[in-house]
View 1 (cartoon, rainbow, N blue to C red):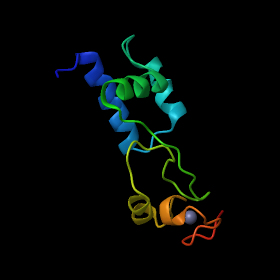
View 2: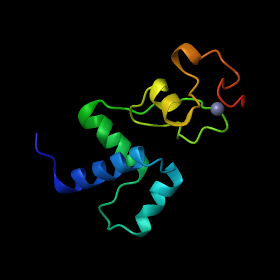
View 3: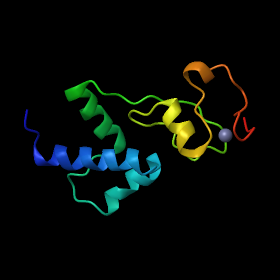
View 4: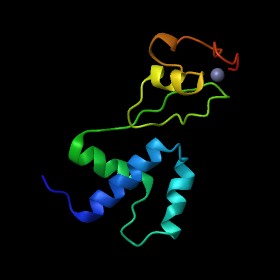
Length: 104
Ligand SMILES: [Zn+2]
């Protein structure tokens, strides 16, 4: 399936957001620097879900964690290895304190 150019551009922006730790608010503020084909984060995620079934999930992280909590696809191990902290998911789901930085 060949996607229209505006889909490719918006999905490329969404992938950039996920790779570069861009906040949801900062992403949506790009509407002031893009043309009228720029989709809000909500619209972009909805269109991605509609054509692929890919969805985002929110995962609680420790307060010191610098990794965003709404990535498209990243494992808890990837987060822990990246910054030494972790997301409270899978085997860490019942934890209240980050074992790396001792923050809730
Ligand atoms: Zn931590």
